Length: 210
Image 1 (cartoon, one colour):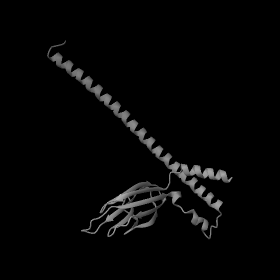
Image 2 (cartoon, one colour):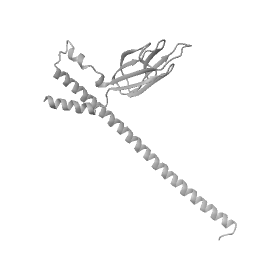
Image 3 (tube, one colour):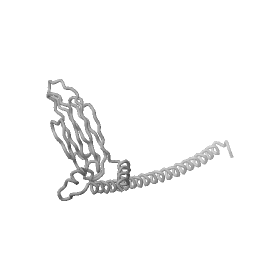
Image 4 (cartoon, one colour):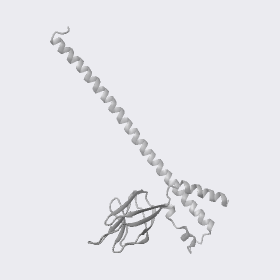
C-alpha cells in the first residue's frame, strides 16, 4: 500500500503544473527587473529571494497585480521571503528595483528568486506539527495526496473551459469567414453581371453589335 501511495504521489507530482521555479539574473544599477505570470484565483504563492550586497546600493521588491494593487513589498532587501494569495484570475508581477545614490558608481548585483505556487507552496510540516491536527506521517501524505488531486481536477477543469472557449471562438471565426466569402462571391457576381450588361448597352449604342 505504501508503495502504491508513493507511486501515485510521484505520478501526480509529475502531472501537476505547479512546480517550484528558480531564476537568477544580474540587476544593473538604477534599473528594475519584473517577472510576470498569469495565476488562477485562490492560489498561494511564496518566494525566496537573495540579493548580493553592494556598498551604498539598495534593492527593493514589490509584488502587484495588473491593476496596480500592491500585494507585498519591502525595501533594502538582501535575503528573505514573501507570500501572497491571489484573489482573482489575473497577471501578477514581481519587480526588483535597484537604487544607487547620486554621484556613486554603481555595480550590478546578483539576484536569485525561487517561487512556489499552489501545493508546492503549502507547508505540510506545519500541518503535521499542529497541536490540533496531530496527524501521523501517513495521514500528512494522504492530505497532500488529496490536495494534489483537487489541484489537478481544478486544472483540468480550467483546461476544458479554455478549450471550450477556444472552440467557440474558432467556430465563430469560421462562420464569419464563410459569410464574408459568400458575400464577396455575391458582390463579384453582381459586379460581373453589371459589367456585362453595361458593356452590351455600350456596344449597342456604338452600333458595334446588334
